[in-house]
Length: 613
Image 1 (cartoon, one colour):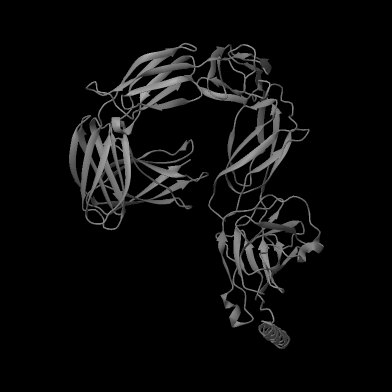
Image 2 (image 1 turned 45 degrees about the vertical axis):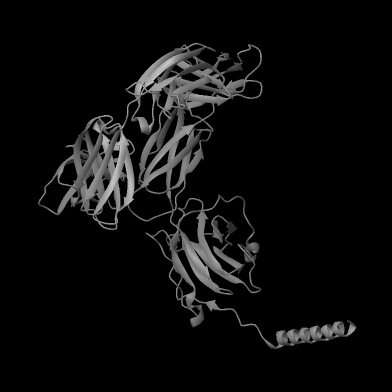
């Protein structure tokens, strides 16, 4: 035993000596270094790319700068001393020497920016930030090999697209130039509508809806606060359509602006008026204990204010505009067993209005779901809807019975059936409920759905199919996505198809549209054939707003057939079957004039042009 131990010690000692001598004799290879031919401009150019700099050795040719990636890290807080720029960042386990990235931040004219920050990310959201030095220079050292993203931030300047860098072990990249473009400053003023006096401390928020054609920037929302004179300045806006609104705790917004920012814009005038607030206590059905729950204020079917109560049952809603219409105050406790829904007089003056809300026990409803032959329907989805706060759902059991136990508010509640196996919503019944009372014997009638088996011929082989079957008005529809393995495919549909209905299918350069007659409970076997589509190439001529969609309405069958999203230059392409259509460009609540289009059967291509205000 002692001999084996001694032999092991001798062998281990010899191995340790060999490793030590090898480490002394083998010298580490010097780090690779890349020197750029010229500073690579990164910043405000369409789809910008940092050019690959000249490599000092062929081994470094694998290193490259890739296309920009989307995304950006959190907002910078504080200022770092320029002496800390040589510290290691981003690092999963770097080599002793480590890779490095160095360069400078400049404006559109090439002048260096001394008040900029550079952001570098190794992982998806692992952003590290450092301020540049007084000469606008930055350097990141001690970097591990891998993929990085690099960008810059400066007050008053647009954020360029984030660029991707791929580093090898020990690689050094220098001379990168991050070029930034000054943004548009949009001034404005916030005032009280009642007397025109300035509003101090109002928050003005701008949200970008769409950009105008031009350079691509990484753009976030902007905000500013008004000063003592009510004036504010929104910084660094990109040209485009912005949604701008303002608010303050004791005032409410009179209007929201959608402004096209181009660089020569008039100052914004944002008018506020003093708002009303509803405050009070939420009392349980026992009349003494405060309740925790929700209080919501509705006006003409629209939610205008709400609040979650605190421990003592007190609530205070956000401000809302006074008006001549009566208000509906809806409240419920946390477990949805007590409710209150009562109308109160209009609140037409600003200020805090107190209102104590007393909750009442929830009501119950029970009944059955029957088909057209009087037989019970199992698994039907029964929907209970009331004037405020939404709806509640229950399914019928094997006997067709359903019940809502103490979870419905007193007052008028609508009951209906909505289940694919029974067709569509049928026999909507309105029941007036009393607090804490169970209403039973409710009978809801549902119908057996129409069963449609569709065989499609001349299908494009190996192409995805988008199909739709819709009854008149397009209310009851069923969509499916199938992969065509041959020129014939069968699809199954079930729904409340009653009367004249439509079947539509799209796949690349072939389309299908056909009408058929159906009745509830009928079983149909239909066969339709694809036909070659006509290519409709168009362009949206716009002056200020980039449209988000082009809607296509089939005038023969009377429903929206397809939609196209235009490119940045306004161009779009559609595949339509021969027939009559209406094309219209739209974005949000903006709509261009409709264009009537007839697609003939004997042509392959049609050119159109849409207008947009």
